[in-house]
Structure formats: structure tokens, C-alpha cells
Amino acid sequence: MPITISLTEARAIAKDAYLYGWPLSENYNTIHAYSIDPENPNYKAPFNQIFNDSKVFTPADTAIVTPNSDTPYSFISVDLRAEPLVISVPAMVPDNRYFSFQLIDLYTYNFSYIGTRATGNGGGHFLLAGPSWEGGGDRSDFAGICYSESHFALLIGRTQLFDPGEISAVQALQSQYRVQTLSEFRGDSKPPPAPPIKWPLPVTGAKGKTPEVFGVINFMLQFCPTNPTEVGLMERFARIGVGAGLPFDVKSLSPDMLKAFEDGIADAWKDFDDLNRQVAAGEADSNDFFGTREANNNNYLYRFAGAKIGIYGNSKEEAIYPMYSVDDEGQIPDGSTSRYAITLPKDDMPPAQAFWSITMYDARTQLLINNPLERYLVNSAMLEKGEFKPGDDGSITFYLQTTCPPVEVGGKMNWLPAPAAPFYAVMRIYVPEPRAYEGTDRWSPPPMKRVGPASEKSS
Image (cartoon, rainbow, N blue to C red; front, side, top):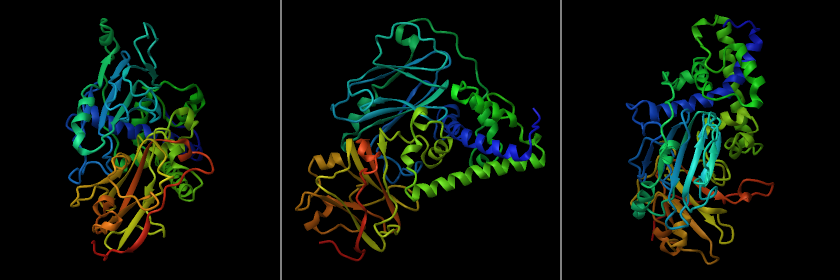
């Protein structure tokens, strides 16, 4: 289809279409790796089958940056075209163990959750339906019904690990997570299969910042029935050849039109950079980049930013991730030059209704730190078991440094080993209290304070 609008208008539409569609392309990159290309090193399982990753991450694991060692993962790429799926989960053991399945549609919206916060720890069967399901049959067997706007979706499961020694308990729970088609669950005959798909190659790396990405976006949109709030938007995008199932050939663009598309994409990234500056200045909150369509309110720049800084980030009601990237003086922490401390007051612990943790990472590799304790994080489960030495006022101080702190302040008990290099730490708060993410007087994590040079010896 020839593009007949002005170069100026094409540039503006290309910017908006890129902000809207780039997260879908990034999502496709992951789904393609997880469930379409079995030769990919990150391949998990075919569609509608579960993959449980029960490993405890250590510094030897290098495939994932800033890895989470709190909650071993489960993954399900789902194809809902033919019929719904039934996700079955057991009751948690013990009954205070946190777990969740985060349900993510092709847009990257977190459209629903199954788990501790959303549905409780009692277990049950949950129906997951796509846009083509007509809703027939008995629903009384289901503890909940989740609806996806798109025909494909990704489920990410997390199961709390209290300490590395009880990994077998997590594995036992993961082995009870189950995925079935609705016909299998009911013992009915199978419906006709969905038609086969010719999967395109993902557009990755630097090509993701070129007009080539619109070919993948058009491919993805055919599995996303147009939301009523976006009918006009899709009509506008179609003026530059962006839409569900439309062919898109970069080579067909004239040199001037190609430049207009490239400039529109550059404009989108400039908007992202401007938003990052707003976040740094406290004028925007990155927790708002993730959530449902309703929570996002069609703010496509926010959805784009979420996909860029941490695709599949949890909705803020489920988890938030305060980061210690600088110390209290605004400097990047460096274990080769300094020692640091984070103090949690007795009456102002991280406001987690499930649990919290603080994990240490090497700033250069973004991986966990080799250390003699083989300790990579501290968390609330360790606090509840009395594994830290409190101060006289009941507070808990963690020492982030290369050497063991003196025994009078906790020694190994309160040590979170740091590398002799730049580092950062991430606090994870699961099921945070609302005061952690909303309101003008919201809770703030205590600072990481520089307490002295790195030369002090332990005692």
C-alpha cells in the first residue's frame, strides 16, 4: 500500500506506532526464544507446556543479568486460539510461602495474577481464556477465570525459596503446577486445532531501532483483536502501513520516506530519554510503567519504558524493586575503596506483606558476587529466624564490604559481601503495602551510607 501522506505526518505517526508496537516486538523475541526455536539456548518448552527452573542462582549463572535468587521461576507460553487452558496450582506448604503466576498478554500488560496476593495460597484450578472463547460450560470447578486480550500470552511463575537448603520443597511444589487444555480438564473431545503459523525471525539488537521492526509488529497485531479504545489509533497507523497482518517492506519506502520513519523512531527514543530524566528527578515513577491496560490508561510511552528497562516487571501491587545504584553522597558504590551500611529501623522495616530481600550485584557484570560465605542476599525470612544481630535499638544493619565486619556489630551474621569493584544492590518487596508505592508521604528505603575506607580489618 503506497504511503500518500506528507513526510512530516509520516514521521509523527511512525513515532507513535513505534512507541505502541516496539514492546510487542520485544515480547515476540522472548516468546520465540522460549517456545518457538528449540535451538535457542533460552528455549523452555513448547506452547501450553510448563517449564520449571528450580535452580538457585549463583555467580556461575551468567545468562541472566540481575538474577533473582528469591523465587525460582516457572514459564508457560500459551496459545489460546483453539480453546482455553486450565492452570492448576497446589496449596502452598508452608501456608505462608509466597507464590505467583504473572499473566502477560502480547501488549506486555499484566492482565491478571494467580497467587498469594491475588487468589490466596489454598490452591485450585484457574481458567485462562483468550478473545475467541465464547464462555460455555460449567464454571463451578474454577477458583477464578482470567481473560487475555490477545490469543497468545506468557505466564511467569515465582515460588518463594526461604533458603537454599529447602530447594527440594520448592521443586515439590513446582512439580504440582499443571497446564491442561479445557477439553482435557473436562474429558471432552478436542476442538479443531488452530491453523499453523509461519513464524518470522525476530528483529533483535540494533535492527530493533529500525523500520524493520514494523514487520514484526504487524505480525503480532493479527493476534491482538483491536481494543475499542484504539480503533481510531489503528486507523491512523494504517496510513503508514502499520496494522494487523499488513505486509511491510522497508525496501518499498522511498529514501525520503525511509528517513521520515527513522526520524520518527529517533523521536520515540528521545521521548524515552526525557522520561528517564523525569524519573531521576522524581517527577515520574517507574513503578507505574507496569500493570493492566486499565492502570496504564493507554500511556504507550510508559508501556514502552517498562519493556525497555525491565520487560515483564511486576505490577506495583505485586512487587517493587528499589535500587541502590548510588550511596548517600550520590556516588557509585565501590568495594575497592569504601565500606557501606544499610540500616533497617526496628519499627520501619520494608513494608512487605509477603517478604523482602536485598541482593548484591557486580556493577560491571550485573551478576552475583563470589564470596567466602556464599551469601548473595539477605531477606526477611532470615530475619524471622534470628540470623542477624540487632543493634541496641532493635534495628538491623547490613554491612556491604569486601571484608567481614567486626563481631561486635554482627560479623558474618550482618555481612552482605561486596566485590572489590563497583557494585549495586536491589531491594525486592513482594506484595508491598500501598504506602510503599502511592501517596505523597510514601515509604522510602533507607540510604546506603558510606561508613569508611575499605582498608579496615575485621576482628
